[in-house]
Each structure stands twice: as structure tokens, then as C-alpha cells.
Length: 437
Ligand SMILES: Cc1cc2nc3c(=O)[nH]c(=O)nc-3n(C[C@H](O)[C@H](O)[C@H](O)COP(=O)(O)OP(=O)(O)OC[C@H]3O[C@@H](n4cnc5c(N)ncnc54)[C@H](O)[C@@H]3O)c2cc1C
Ligand code: FES
Image 1 (cartoon, rainbow, N blue to C red):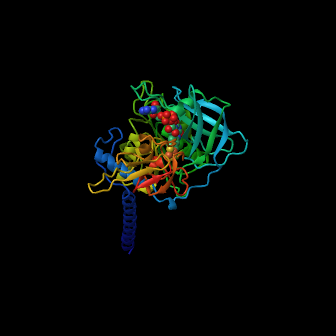
Image 2 (cartoon, rainbow, N blue to C red):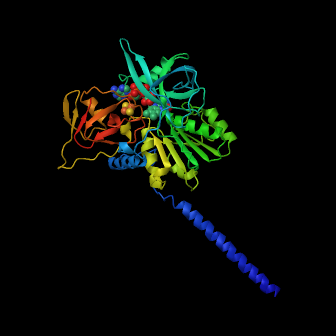
């Protein structure tokens, strides 16, 4: 009798253990189902040279931005103030040993508390830059690089050097002006925070922040906000730079890593200096690649935020999608011209009708060049007088009235677009078009 009860108990225990094991296996395969096995993931260290792969990648990227070509379905958020507001530079802080990145702490001259913003958003500046004989108005965008505070906004600006080996090309206009001429106590004209690349709080998933070079700035704002608010979300930060001389906010990031068990820091140096020590100064030698993400992240669902230079964006964003990450979980921003991430150029078929773009104020009708990245590039090439700033759909400077015809956006505009207008820098014509320019 005791023997029979013992056997029965053993059978029940075995059944329970089997059920638990099957449940655990199902859970494991469910989460693994989000990811695909990639034998040759796209590697940022060796970006694809093949143009057809590149084109496929850029198409994938365009799909990932929930971009809209339909103005009616785009509802811009209300700006915190209209037009430009005057700010004073309270403090300038060099952020790296080479002084190539400088942070500017900005407070409004009207003394009113600052409206909050969503971490990841940027400010738009109108800078009056004087040359020897004239003053130019230059518009540029800079991401907010700290958590929202009521007394100041912070931006961190990298000096844009002239391309290597081309000394005749001038260094970056706005960044050189900010670095060399804007001092503490000076004032700047600033538009309200804006932009659709920002932290998504609604779905509290674990977060992977990936910043390459100066693309770290929106990540800093997100990270500071999350950790200062005591989030219990898991956060991974992959920060790719050349070496210790280029890295910004080193102590700040290390202090976060030391004090927050839910924050995992991966500093990646592509070309470490002799003085940079692996395991202390940086965690990984090389760039931020899909290999690295696959090796270090657990198999689970994350929100990915990516901002960095062109090769990083072109490899990581489509690479993540290829890995099996849902495109709805990938958010990215590129600081460069919008044409870096654009639709695949559709080559016209032999029978396709050429498209004519008419610039009504200039009195010119020109056949659209299918190789042009945007209407802005097309207009500038044809000496049409149009205004521009960021070349990335962010500042709104190139907004132009569409008198007839339709345009197609290559990415979702970050700037607010008035009905019946388009942003030339991120649009191409769909059919014959007349623009008020
Ligand atoms: C949403 C958004 C957020 C951003 N956030 C940040 C940020 O947080 N921090 C930051 O530092 N930047 C950021 N940027 C980038 C920033 O807006 C500027 O684009 C950047 O500072 C360079 O502007 P610039 O006027 O200095 O350079 P530009 O004058 O625009 O020149 C850019 C580059 O082109 C080169 N160049 C100039 N003329 C020529 C020519 N004829 N041929 C070839 N090359 C030429 C210059 O030497 C320079 O390297 C952001 C951009 C966007 C759109
Ligand atoms: S130039 Fe900034 S939106 Fe087009």
C-alpha cells in the first residue's frame, strides 16, 4: 500500500515536472521566434559595398520610419512656443580632451520656466553668422542632450571639420560659429523643442540605446531621464567612438553604470589609443555591430533607438530588422542630410513619362532628374533661389507651397508642414509639379 502511494506520488511529480519543462520550452521558443538565425549579419565594420544591397537597405530603412507621404494623416504636435525665443548661453563646457564637442547650457532671457520636452527631441537655432562683409542667417538643429529641466536646456555640439585632404573646403559653418564665437552671456534665437525621434514611454519594454559619435546626444537625454526618474526598465547603452580622446561624458556614464544595476554600458572604441585600457576605459574593441548586439543582448523583445553616422545607420537599422526585430520596435534618427536615408531611386522604365517641375516665381520649367536626391538638391543644382537649413526634414526652412501636383516624402517630416506645402529637402515629385519658388 505504502509502495503504491509512493509510486503514485512519483508519477504525479514526474507529470508536473514534465509540464513545467514543456511550458519553459514553449516560452523560450516563443521569445526566440522574434529573432532569426543570421549566419552573416550585416557588419558595420565592413559595410556592404554592393549597391544593390545598399539600395535594399535604404528601402528597408524607409519602411522602418513610420514615414507618411500623406499630409492629412500627419498631425504635428503643438510647439511649446511660436517662432524663435531668445536664450542666453549660461555656461559652455568642453566635453572631450580635444575640445571638439562643447555643451551649451541655455536659459530663456524672459526668465520663465521652460516647458518640458520628450527626451530625444531637438532645438532649432537661427544663427546670425557674420562673414567679412555680410551676415548670413543659418538654421541648424541640435538635439537636447540632458533630461528636461525647468531652468535650462543643454545641447552638445561637435565641430564639423573640413573633409580630410580637402583644405580648400570650409569647416562646418554653424558648429564652428558656436565653438569659436558664441561665448557665455551671448544670446541665441531658438525654436521650441520638436521631433518625432523620442523616447516611447507607453510600452515599458527594455531599451537598447545605440549612439555613434555625436549621435550619443539624444541617447544621453533619454538615459538621464530614465535613470533620474528611477526607472526599473533594463537599459543597454552601446556608444561607439574612435577612442578615449573622442568619448564624451565618460565619468557621468561610468557613475550611472556603477550605481544602477539595470543599466548596462558598452563603450566601443574602433581605434583605441595605447592609453585606453580594455575592460576599464572601454568594453569592446571595434564598432557597434549586429554581431556585438547578438552576442551581448538576451533573446527578448527590446525597443531599439539608433543615432549615428551613415555607415552605422546603413548597417544597423536594416540589420536589426533582418535579425527579426519588429520594425515597430526600431526608432532612429540621422543628423546628416535626409538623402542618406531615402527611398530606393526608382529607375524610370523606358515608357515612363518624364516629370516636369515648374518653379513659378523663377519662371523655370525643368525636367526632373531621377538621380536627384530631393527637390531641394534639384532646385539648388538648377540655381533656383530656395532657403534651407538642416537638409533633414527637421527645421522647416525649406517649406514651399505646392501650387499643383503631388510630392512624395522620403521620410516623415520632423518639422510641422502647413497644408498645401512640402519640405523640399525630403521630397521628390510624384507627377508634374508646380512649386511657388
Ligand atoms: C535633428 C538633428 C539633430 C542634430 N543634433 C546634433 C547634435 O546634438 N550635435 C551636433 O553636433 N550636431 C547635431 N546635428 C547636426 C547639426 O545640425 C549640423 O548639421 C552640424 O553641426 C553641421 O553643421 P555646420 O553648419 O557646422 O556644417 P555645414 O556648414 O553644414 O557643413 C557640413 C560639413 O560639410 C563640409 N562642407 C562644407 N562645404 C562643403 C563642400 N562644398 N563640399 C564638401 N563638403 C563641404 C563641412 O566641412 C562640414 O564638414 C543634428 C542635426 C539634426 C537634423
Ligand atoms: S532644410 Fe530643414 S526641413 Fe528642409
